[in-house]
Image (cartoon, rainbow, N blue to C red; front, top):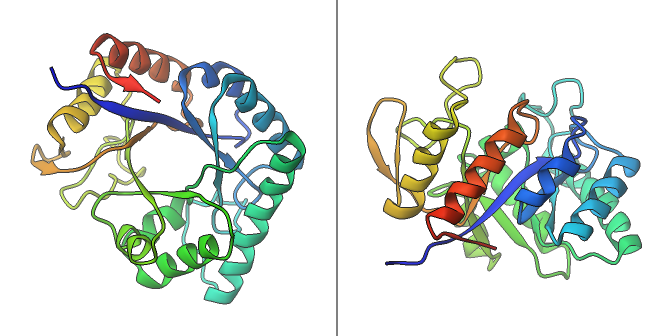
Length: 246
């Protein structure tokens, strides 16, 4: 039987306060670093937890928009966005230096993540920020996205990410949170959704279409009120299926 390997990640440090419960069921995490949520104190707390549990740490920068939790587009110049993202990542790097923990990856948050998947200018800003660091780090990206192409062209290692608790449209965009079908709440439905993507390299969209996809890491949203139950169940079922989580 083919051995499947996958990473399991969650967005953390966003004010929910469930990181201690989440960490045992994660292999990597994305820490809010001041753009949409988080501050030095929350970063310190989450980095310390990740260190204890051996969880890889990533930066989770966003549009500088705490009011809307980084989930709405923000009109700003490429120069201003570059400076903001750099400041956010630098803030986390300062905490990581204190804790003697390395930065494993970058994963943009919310609207920035979704827009950079199709907007080449935004994708280029994110990639240029990563290129500005003389550090080995990976970039979490959606499969088939513009940002994946831009990163590859610039020799930035990419990690294809899928969402365990979100439904997909036929173009591999996520179903809008404004729609009731956006989130997956049932643990069995979520596992079937994830295991199909891992084992068959396809996703069943909200319209029932089966679309090719690739997955290296699976995200369960840490701000989902059911996150603990969902990720614990997912982890257990993946292990039962012989999937290696790393």
